[in-house]
Image (cartoon, rainbow, N blue to C red):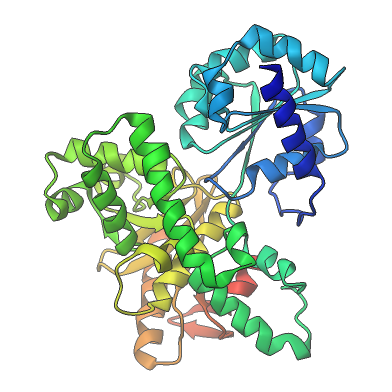
Length: 417
């Protein structure tokens, strides 16, 4: 075991020696470290959770355990490991547990470490760490930080450009980069080699299915879960019910479909946006819109006969709303008016609807203007909302429609707000 931990120390030191781009986070990481509570960094595989933890702890004295390593799990002895950590990392102040959900009964062990006064930073690639597992075992003992693939601003920073201040000589390059991001997304390891992005993301997608879902839940019907993942990917941004999916894939039951949909959300791969309704039962039973954590997965894996920039942009807006702290349980929904006109995003703060947002790649055609604006005004009347937006690729202006003001702005500009 000592050999394993020494190897992991070298791994830690090698990682610390590399250069990284500081990520934009919703919370101040220095404030996080000053808390005695567990610092929980969650998000999909390969988005930089470990890197974020290392950046947070770079100038600190900290010990490191990586539970993605099979040899550590196979030889696990909690008491021996804790004694060896004291020897290998004398007087360490923090303990970083990377991908700790891979350790059986990890939550019980982490609870014991917390009781013993260890200052913990842990990472994990499973949404259950924020729901059932953390909520039941570690209620009130942790602070969450969710990581996602690079935002558009971070993508530009990697290319030494400031999204908020594009110089005149950078305009053409900025257009190319924005289109690249729309198609290929923001997974960190794809940015330096865009020609390999599709291959990398296809492999990563399959790995998430097999490692984080099939293996974790011991699924025997692997073809069914894989077919569902590909079906959801091809229908991203569309509303689907569990009955729709069951019928389309000839699955055994709606219960199986709902269970598989939950499994596909756990590793932060797919998200399901509910339809807004003041009656909870009606909202629960309505179809949910399907979103994927990164546009690059769509380009790499989804069956498509066209680029469909409109849906790619809508998916990009959804993920950015997650970055802003909106969630699909309390503050972010889609909506259908009494006349069955769809609103892409209803954003709620506290108990009132704050903004209504449509996404349209372009707003030059009169038919498009009429469709988007009439839906917004109708929904605004029903939901008593004054802030109305249409997010486009590059158009910006104000429209007056039936007595209401609608702001048409580029999605990239809205992201910066």
